[in-house]
Length: 332
Image (cartoon, rainbow, N blue to C red; front, side, top):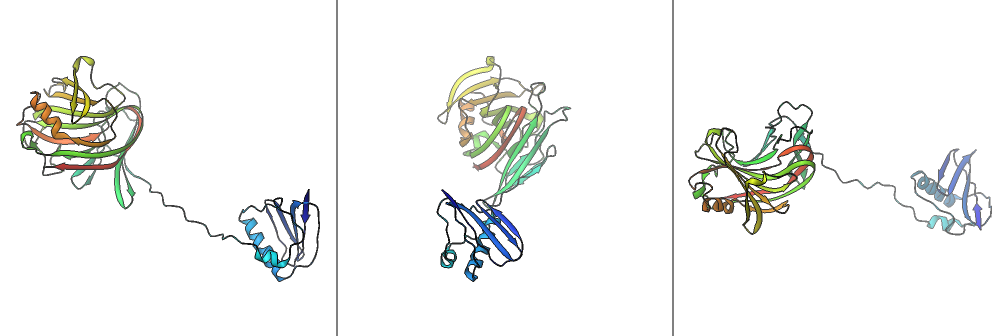
């Protein structure tokens, strides 16, 4: 059975409603009606303790706290019972601050962090106007984290862009980000990259390292002899199957090797791609191990120069966002 208990107290005229409790103040009297297990009505003047308890309950109701009367029998509680009822704090708990990324969306925008350069590379956009690509930064645990995002429409099936992080000197740039590169392949004792990325994307794209090999220092576009790529993830094929040179293992990881002579029109540069047979979003890339394989198999000369090592996404179409959770280059 369900009871209703009521009591009146002297208060200013007002009203409030909470779940399971209705309060109405009229003419200095407060009528309190609470649903419970039975029917009973008690009307009497409330003393100081009752008034204080009712004011607390009114506050709780106004704060949206649930007061359920059918879980216990409500009759005529004493002032001491009401005074002993616990009152929860209405103080709100502050929410954790969420870092909002800062975007740099101009074509070829660059950001520099020590010996790394982040570049909003849109080399293949042509006359496409309906697109967006941005470098991103955000604060995380007191440090700055870098990344990028893109949105490219479907088009001719060609690569539109390569948002990237650069270590060294690209052949089109006027200076290097580090004193370690350019350097002759035969003189490089250590060149490795510890990385971890957070990637969310749809469409046609890859995640790949790009290594420019030139015959001169400083490098120029005319002295590029080889472009060596290491693909870590992809949603499209690197090259036509006729350029597949076999399966190779470098640093205990299996790759499909593609060799395409004079791929870049008019440049005479050879294109070499190591395509990981499994997606790899974190780990350590030993660049020297790849260079040693290519020198040992007569694909590149040992006296040529590594101008730059880059990591980015070659994008054909679709949307995506990448964050570099870790990117540490060790060179000697």
